[in-house]
Length: 252
Image (cartoon, rainbow, N blue to C red; front, side, top):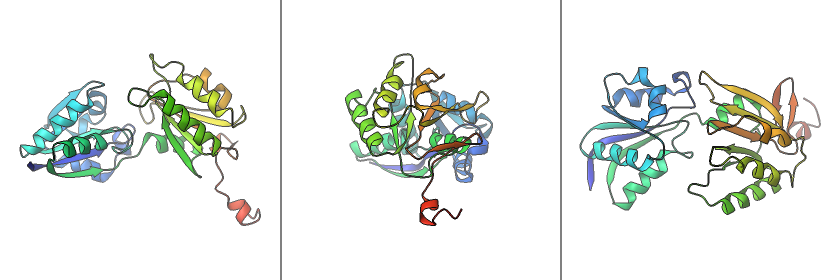
């Protein structure tokens, strides 16, 4: 099957339109139909006036993806929006799975966006300056046993660890377990940063320690960044050295 329209999969960034790329805004401007999770649609409301809007709630990702594909197959130019970057825990992969499963050929373009992880890192300082791993604690589609293995591997390898979906009502203790695993390889006073609702009106950012992360106010809109063995805090900033001091014998 081959479609007549075009489908943009658009990353709108972590929050307000000021963090969207020009390319993302241009894709929305070209589109006749905009599909997305209702929270993300609300964030870009001022940019999509006059468009056909299709919004749904949580856990209806497959429905949204299929609706976007359907409209594009029918000849419309469609934007399927994702928070952050559409290729990071978002809609791009799901769309390609749907297309490949039914052998649907469609003019499709993925528009990258500022991910929640690097938006949070920018507010904290420079915690991602060296190798890092990103791990989601949501076990809705990934078994917890697999998540535990990834936590052990990342912590033992001394990666900075960015944690998505650290806590929800149903997963209240996953972050506690994650920190316990990481503390098998790192000291309790390892710097950790937390960003919640990044670039939205209720944004909050704090720097704490690995041991104190479970005591912090966390939710589905939070990102936790746990430093590696070299990460330090200076003047309210969380910093992971890249290794310049060693390379140039301390001449910084």
